[in-house]
Length: 525
Image 1 (tube, helix red, strand yellow):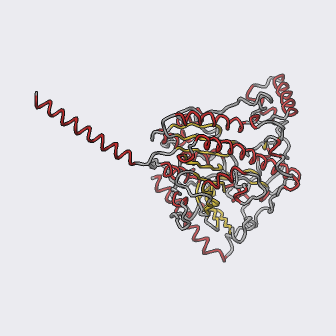
Image 2 (cartoon, rainbow, N blue to C red; image 1 turned 60 degrees about the vertical axis):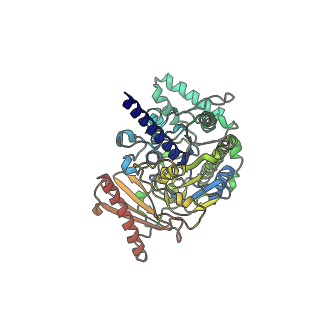
Image 3 (cartoon, rainbow, N blue to C red; image 1 turned 120 degrees about the horizontal axis):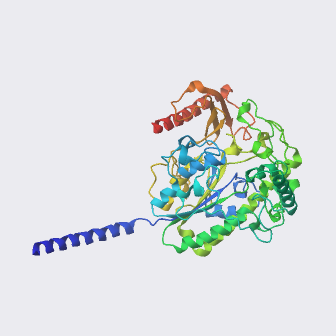
């Protein structure tokens, strides 16, 4: 009996010693940082600190001074659903198998998990407001597995103005007309699901400038909800990820009047090059059906047709007003972080889910492999990030989570296909990474265009017959090539792919793209 007691004491002593050493090891590990994750729908780098000095965006400027902005950052697929599925899983679109607005990656690629879900496994509290995934392609609860505290989509509009019509419109005249159309549709026996289409076929303005509060529209509500959730998260004892998804400047371009009043429409800059590029295959373009769906836009316009100048000015003015509206929301969020004293242990990342055409190439919206559709604002701030730095290296949106994980001291996920950009966030301008191009793609029916974008060039190769990079590389399906030189021709006015003086650079870029596509296939195997 005495032997058993002594043995028990020895075991207990050894266990206590192990626990003590484990605690010492754990205490030496860096504390995990919080993550503020800001997604902005349809936001191109039309911001003052990105060179658009006519834009009034003081809070984007403020965030830029707090950290690092990437000037050559690109999404992997220039439309909401695929872009968001890609960044939220940390994988390229051919891995998620999301190439449209309707596919849910949970069904198309059930082996994948979301990165917020991964953070929950690492001890994080995660929650979200607004548009993080595309609502038409995300699982129940806006991908409920991603959030330890449920996602919110508030609709408690400012009672002074009441509910926004179809979540968009607050102009009293517009709301009255829409209510009359709804009554008309109901009298004709239209069902609930048919009412929206019935109204929008007759009345769906592309812009609105109503004299209302920020909270009369959705994004103002998202900001107020974010502040409430920030209170909950900062009162807890876990590291947290707060995802805020603002929907403007997505169409329709609706924003309170005060943001429209920041700009003189007569001075609004229009796209300099409003033609199709010389030598560019016509199928690389589109006829901007998303915009033509609005009742004040001519639905008969086709590829290469221009919208009249007055409407162009109105649309660009509306986009600019919406950007300034979001800028004000960003300021409220940054103010809250400062007042709570959590800036020193919070990693901030802000990104657009794709760029946006505003009349260049006669194009509107996104849906292409051109510069205006793929290039985004991509900004980091917080611990480990240099102040007020611009970085020109070509980078991918899929690099987001590897970068955030390193900054937040989270173990890297084996799933992610991006690269940590932390070496580029250093204050030392000589630091670099082994990555000299960004990669993206876009489909036109059975054709898929794959692109690499370097510091100077973009090469796009179009493959037919539903080729995907998960299949063995097949050069026989290559049907068209585009090559753009942004030093010589920043507006993409000419496709240089058939110019013999570019043969060497075209072959070099082809090999980069081919190697990337083959690497994806090898990973799939």
